[in-house]
Image (tube, rainbow, N blue to C red; front, top):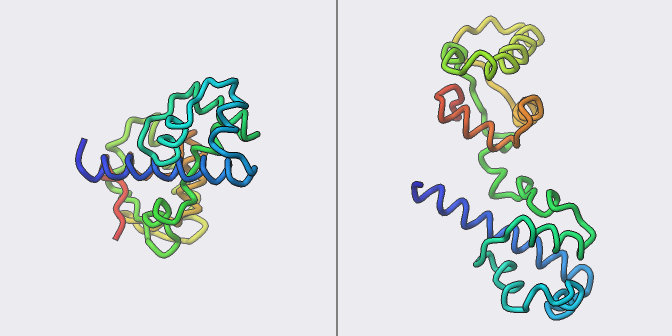
Length: 166
């Protein structure tokens, strides 16, 4: 794993921790009170480490905390709306699909993309054969077709050389 990815994962853990702290504080709970509500399955130092992003949170522990805070586990993990995670997906940053490189994807992977891009090209009356600019909203819609998060789709398409952003 490269340094950029490690830094991104570290920052993700911090943002999830910040969300956990905010949820706890919004409910007026101390770390000790959360421990008590968990039936003492948590200790204060562990909760504090989660909130600081210094300790990994297992799915089971995430579910326990989500239950205590009255949230879904996914809502706690969903930090893609945070400004720094939106920077690459911001409305001002054009994302360009290399139409001439879509065939790098497996047929079942490219079918939803080709269908949507054909729709966009027709809607925009765009005869381009090489590049098509998409917006953040387009990426969000496409990610729904693939059943993954927008950032994950963006990362995948970039890795395959199909998406360029400049």
